[in-house]
Length: 215
Length: 156
Image 1 (cartoon, chains in turn blue, yellow):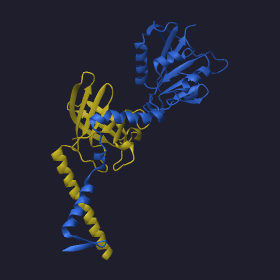
Image 2 (cartoon, each protein chain N blue to C red):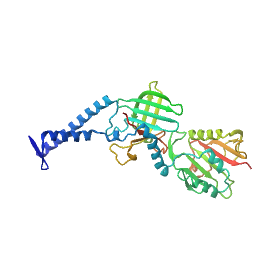
Image 3 (cartoon, rainbow over the protein chains, first blue to last red):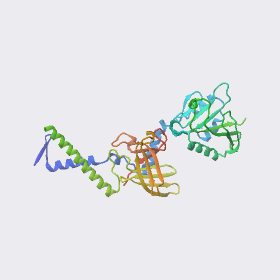
Image 4 (tube, each protein chain N blue to C red):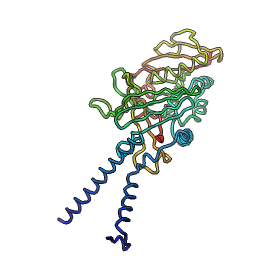
């Protein structure tokens, strides 16, 4: 008993063997083959992260240290120079307005889902305006995290008041580690008056962090 | 008529193959305590992420069971939790930004995972993700660009 396969003659048992090999090959799962061992995991992750790092943003907000460093800037060009190294994470939307590359869903007070950058860093560039540079976060979790960073750097509550021309009361914090610099924090629906993302009515709570050198 | 017979024969051959393959898969899964992943069920199996602080592993069993373990460094204490999971699709009236979601609960009905499945390496993908299956879980929704990346790990 035999059959012809492209002019090559196989005995019947060979046919069964060939079919069985085809079957086994088709039975193997590509996904199961694409698994990594625990020992290799760290290496694979590191390679993956290295590739991603080159193209993707890795965070949603500036750090406390960066805000403290930015407090030494008193011109837009100084801030542009500082933010240039962070352009993978923050893009320059327009003059004086940086926004996080990341976007996410922010729930506003009516329960509506808004998609937006999770933070902005705006500088007041109007010729008549007094200098203002504010880092505004749009999620409580991010605000809490940044505030914790400042707390770990020794910032403690000094007083509160209406300092910087915005309608919300701000808390002022200072740290012995960073003499001559103050942190101003507020939660508000009016972080800026008709500027960029905040041009229309703001319906989500904004967590505003500002660090300045004391006058 | 000849074509119809050929069509039926091909159909039967494919159906038989799939049935036998499934039977083999289940036998192997049972004997080796693992998941054989096929098209449309790429989420099954064991996944892990290692960071300087911890090694997190979880397994999505075929029968809906969920196994979770975390090793915290430097103490290397291992916490193991068992529970159940579900992949939830879009729900009427809710934004598609939030779905599909992986929701896992432990035996005490506490939520362990509630994440948007942002990405899973497709079945039969040869040139993606450096040859390793990857699952990215986002805490909020589809627009999150920060997610937790887990890698498929060998089960044996």
